[in-house]
Image 1 (cartoon, rainbow, N blue to C red):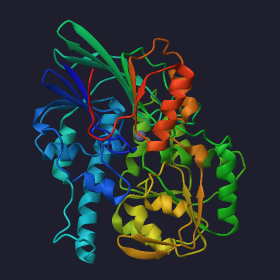
Image 2 (cartoon, helix red, strand yellow; image 1 turned 30 degrees about the vertical axis):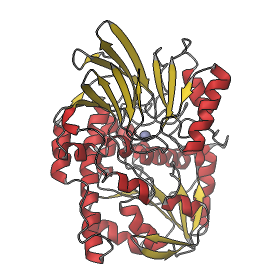
Image 3 (tube, rainbow, N blue to C red; image 1 turned 120 degrees about the vertical axis):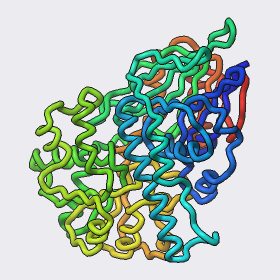
Length: 460
Ligand SMILES: [Zn+2]
């Protein structure tokens, strides 16, 4: 008997965890952390509906925290199997998990110091030691290579754009004489992005598990270079500080690449950029190491010029980050987390949101109920670390820089799939987005869709 259970990314975009069970052999596709509103974040602390000690292996699609961030917690709860990922994902996840553990410990210490916790003591979800144990379990699997897990499961990765090393997972399950395939989309990227390779044609499958972050939306047809240049003109004219919440690997390089091109073309003047992240220092090295996994040059000097620029300062240490508090514009600060759910960006927001000379540019997806969503909604008072913060800063959205396909691009990606899947599970979206994508699949392809709820389990 084969079952598929949805223990995350159901009714929401975060916490991706799909459990596949074939006659008692269990594997997990992705092991993400819930992020966003408090109710979601608290789910990370709930007992799991399955025993982590019975999970044989974890297969990751990519290194974003909402797909890998729960892994150290899973290890802490007794999971002792291997973790498979593409080579870049192994490296990026190792950096992000170590960073995430550091943030967990820092945030807990900060809350304890400020007494900003409703618990007797604020605890981290996992520690640096848990993250290290998780990282030791990684095994790299290249794109296109069939990897046998055991007698029940084998899988291969397909390129899906979105982030360096991001993949879809084609899983083949053998149950006695029956063979079933499931394609897990992972996060589907955009076409013609400056850094990421376009998503590859998906294979045919019996079942499809498809993300729906922008399942009901079509991205604005704005030229992302034009929008970024206009924003930077504004920053220079008003001597503003532009705050960009962004993941240190992927999005940060995309912004740097675009800024450097605009400067090289004489479209914008040079602006000092501060990348405030302990992870940022590794980023260019990763693009050098994984030349061929992105669209940029393989040459180190050219990559340095494209991604680092001439006026970029990396802030690795916390003290160096604090020095940015007194920075005057025009300047750009790029800092994680991209979803504004934690990390150093929160300290910059506490410091700079009350200043009308600050501009905050939102570039990624923000789940409902999050701080970033409230800022975009125009709230004039927000709470960060339980501290009231007046918002006088200008908040803008750069939707052209999104890393997620919209519904039109998802339909385009699936165009080569001419055999109809027996069932399509629409996941990784807020309810109205998932419903909209399911409707697009029904009306344009005649596909049978289901939108699973959290912890739903289906027999295949
Ligand atoms: Zn992602």
